[in-house]
Image (cartoon, rainbow, N blue to C red; front, top):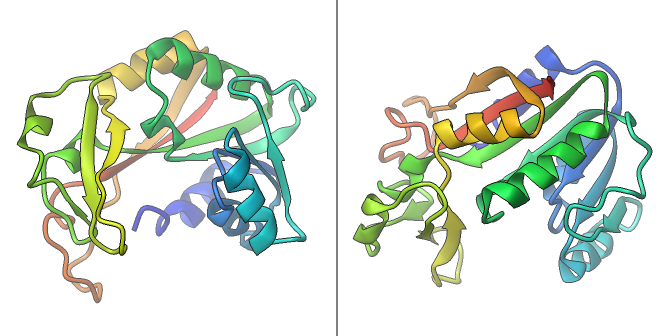
Length: 214
C-alpha cells in the first residue's frame, strides 16, 4: 500500500525522466521507478545491499555512496528523487538535514523530492503486515526515540528498530534543509481491497511528502 499511490503522485508532480533512488537497498524502488519510465540510479551506503541489487538486476545502475556525500553527481541533475523509508533510520536532525540538503542540491528547477516515511502511528497500532503489541513502550516515545516493530509477512520475526519522527519535526527538518513542502499524502486502505486490513482503513501508516527547493 505504501507504493500504491506513488505512480499517480509522481505523475501529478514530476516532469522529466531522470530519477535518483536514495537508499535503494536491494533495488526494489529503483526498479519500480524504471517501470514508470524513469532513467534511474539507485544509491545506498550499504555495500551488501548494493551488491544484492546488482545481482538481482545486472542491467541496473546501482552505486555505493558515503553518508551525505553526493559529490559523484552534478548539481541540478535530477527531475525526481525518491526516498522510500531511509529517513526512518537516519537518527538525528543534523544527519537528516545534511542528507536532505545534499539531495535538494541535485534537483533541477521544477524537480521534486518525494520522501516516503512511516507515520508515528505505525509504531502504536496493529496492521496487516506489522505488529507493535510487544512494544507498549512505543506509545511513550517522541521524535528521535528508537521504536520497534515486527514484520508479520516475513519469516524473520526479529524486531526492526526505527527512529520515530513526527510531522512537526519533519516540517522543521525540511525548513532547515531549504526544502518546501508542495503536498502531503497519507494513503489509507480501501475496504474493497482483497486484504485483511486491521487499522489501515482508518489510520494512515505512512506519509508521503512532496518537496521542492525553497
